Amino acid sequence: MCGIVGYVGDRPAAETLFRGLRRLEYRGYDSAGIAVHEGERISVLKRKGNLDQLEPYLGWFPRRGGTGVAHTRWATHGLPSKENAHPHLDCGEEIAVVHNGIIENFQELREELLSRGHRFRSQTDTEVVVHLVEENYRGDLLEAVRLALRSVHGAYALVFMSVREPGVLVGARRDSPLLLGLGEGENFLASATLAFLEFTRRAVALENDELVRVTKEDWELVTTEGKRLERSPYQVPFDVTSVEKGGFADYMLKEIYEQPQAWQDTLRGRLSRSGVLRIEELEEDHFDLKRIRRIIFVSCGTSYHASLLGRYVMENWMDIPVEVDISSEFFYREPRLDPECLVVAVSQSGETADTMSAVRWAKNCGAPTLSVVNVVGSMMARESDGVLYTHAGPEIGVAATKTFLAQIAAIYLLGLYLGQERGLLEPEFIRHTYERLEALSSRIEEVLQDTEMVERCAEKYCRCEDFLFLGRNINYPLAMEAALKLKEISYIHAEGYPAGEMKHGPIALLHPGFPVVALIPRDGVYGKMRSNVEEVKARQAPIIAVATRGDSEIRECCDETIYVPEVEPHFNPVVIAPAMQLFAYYVAKMRGCNVDQPRNLAKTVTVE
Ligand code: G6P
Image (cartoon, rainbow, N blue to C red; front, side, top):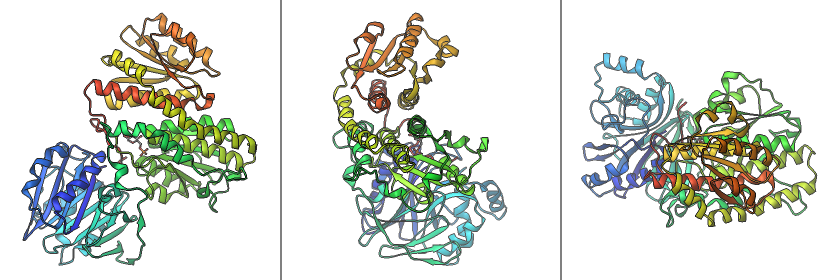
C-alpha cells in the first residue's frame, strides 16, 4: 500500500506534493512526509498520523518551485511513527527515497550495510534501498538506482532525488504501480494518476523492471538492463472534478449516490442494433470462449462478494461449473488449471497483490485470464489476457460502494455474453435481460431517494455491538457484503450468513440486544426465509427485514422493515446493496466514525 508522489517543476514544490498526497490518502494514512531539495540540502518534514498532522507545518518550506518527493504510509515493517515515516535519507543526507511495496530481503541487506558502516534511523524495510543507492552513486542517480536494485528482492515503486543532481527524479518499479504524469514544464511520478490529475491528464505507466529519469522538461525510460525504451503517453479517461466531494459530506456518501450512473456507464452501448451483445474487449484472439469448460473467480474483500454473486448468475445462465476463490487462498488448494479454464479476476484497483499473484499463477498454468477492473491501465488490466472495465469512475472512500455495483453489472454482462457466445441463450432472452438491466438504474435511484426507514433503523440500533445478516441464494453474498460494510466503517462486529446455516451455530448468539437483518425480497426462497425469521423471533432478537415494497405480511412479524423496489428475483442484490450501504453509512456516522478512512484499512492492498 502507501502512496508516493514526486514533483519537478516551477510550482511551489511542497504544496504541490501535498495536494498529490491528499489524493492518495486512501492508500494509507498512518504517517506521512515530504522532502524538498533546497540549495545544498534536502529538507524533510514527517509526522505520525494522517495528512492533517502534516499540513500545519507546510509553511516551513519556501513557496517556490523545485524537486521533491512525498509519501503517505500504511505500515508493514515498523510501527507507524515519525521515524518510520518516509522519505528516508542516506547517511550523507544527500539522497531521499519514498517507497510503496515490501523489500523482502531487507534484514539481510541491513546487516550487510551495518557491517559496512551505514547507520539506520528507522525500522523500515525501505531504508536499506537508499543506503544501497548511496554506495553505488558515482555521479549518475539513475545508474546508481539501477545497480542498487540488483540486490533487492520484493515489490517496489520507488522515487529518488539527490542534491548532487538538482531538478532530477528517478523512479523504478516492480510489482507496485508507478505512473509518470507529463505536464507543461513540470512532471510528476506517483502511485496513481489521481495525484497529478489536477495538473495534467497525460500519463505513462511504468512496467515491471523499468526505471525512469525525469526532469521538468524531459523523461527517459530504461530497463533494469539499461536498455532505452520508447513509450507513448495516454490520456487519463476522467478529470479532476470526478474526484471532488461535490457537496457531499463524505466521499463514501457521494459514491453511494453515484451508483445509478456507475451502473449505466458499465452497461452502456453493449447491445448492437441487431440485438447482438458486443464486448469488444473479449473479441480478441486469446479467448476461445466456446472452449471454456470451467470458470474460476478470484478476488478479495468486496470484490469477492461480487464474484460469489457471479457464480449464481453464471451457473444459472450456463452449462459451466463456476468456482470462487479468495485470492490469498487460491494457491493452497492447488486447483488444476488448463487452457479450458477461464480465470476471472475481479478487482476495483487492479492492483491487489493477492489477486495479482493469482492471475500470474493462472497464466503460468496456461489458463486464460480475464480481469474485471475499474482502474484503466492498472497492473491487472495490463497483465491479464483480457479486461472488462467497470466504468464507476474513481472511488476514494476506502469502503467499496459504487465499484461493487459496477462489478455486479459487469458480471451480469459477462454472463449474458458467455451465454450468447456459447449458443446457450436465445437472442430474445439476451435483449430482454439487457434492457431489464439498463432499467435497474432507475430502481437504484429510488432506493437512494427513499432513505427514511434506513436512517430510522440506523438510529434505533446504532449502539448495538453485534449484527447478523441473513440471506439465501443470490442474496447470501449480499448478506456477507452488508456485514462487511458495517464492520469496516463502524467497527461493529457483524456476520453475514446463509440463512439456512443459522441454526448450525449463530442462533446460539441471539438475544434481545443482537439485531438480525433478514434480506427477504419476494423470490423463490421467500418461504424458507420466512421460517428463519420466525426462528429468530422465537429467540427474541430484533429483526430488520429488507423486503419488497408492498409486502405487508413481513411487516407483521418484524420489528422494522426497509422496503426496496420490486425487481426480477435475480436482480434483487442490485436494489438491496445500496440500502445496506446506506445503513452502514448512517450507523457509522451516528457513532462518530470517519467513514472515508476507517482505522487500520487501506483501499488498495499491495502486500500479500
Ligand atoms: C481492500 C479494500 C476493499 C476492497 C479490497 C479488494 O480491502 O478496503 O474495499 O474490496 O481491498 O480490493 P480490489 O481493489 O482488489 O477490489
